[in-house]
Length: 91
Length: 173
Image (tube, rainbow over all chains, first blue to last red; front, side, top):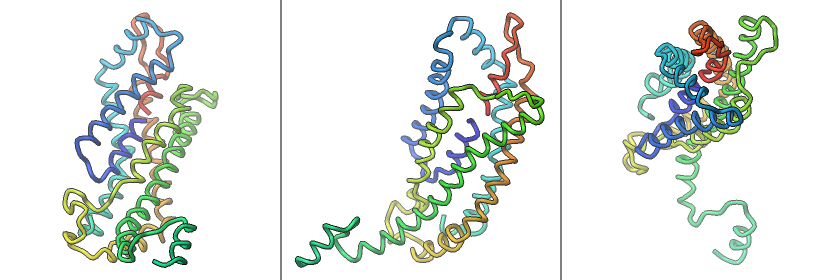
C-alpha cells in the first residue's frame, strides 16, 4: 500500500499546496480509518498500546520506506528515462 | 450555424462552438489523454498484479503453501476501492507543466503537434512494450515488498509475548 501511494505520487506532475495537503491527509486518514474499521469490534487500550509499540520501532518505518522505495524504483527510472533523457524538452 | 447545424450539434455526443477550438482539444487535451490513458491502465494493472505476485511469492517462500494471507480482510477489500480512486488523479493529471507554461500555448517551447506525435508514437502505439516493462516491475516489486518486510518484521511480538502475527507486514505492503 505504501508502494502504491509512492507510485501514484511519483506520477503527479503538477504539485501545489492543495495536492500536497490532499496526499498527506489521505495517507493519514486511510491509515487510522482502516485500523479502526478493521479492529473496531475488538478495539481496546491494549490494541492501541500494541499498535503504537509497532509504530515506535524505527526498523518498522525503515522497512516500509526501503521496501517501497526499492519497489517503485524501476518505474521512477522508467519515467525519468522518458522525461529527462529521451524527450526532455516536452516535460 | 443554420438549422441543420443546430440539429447536428444537438444530436451529437460532443459539440464545440468554434472550429479553432478543435486544435487545443486534439493536441493539448488529446495528447494528455493519450499519455494518461496508457499510464493509468498500466498503474492499475500493476497495482493488482503486484498484490497477487507478492501473495504468490509469500505463499511459495514464507508461508509454506499453507494458504495463509498476509493482508487483512479490509485492507484486501479496500485496496481495490480506495487506491483505484486515488489513481484517478493520474488520469486527470496534465503532463505539460503548469508551473512552466501556465496553460498558455504561446509560452510553449515546442509545437503542440510535436508533443502529440511523441505521445502517439512512443506511448499509445507502443502500449504493449510499456505493459511489458510494468510486468517486470510488478514481479520486482512483489518480491522485494515481501522479502524486506518479512525479514525485518516477522519476529515482532507485543508486550505480553504474544506474536503480532503478520499484520504489520500487510500494513507495510
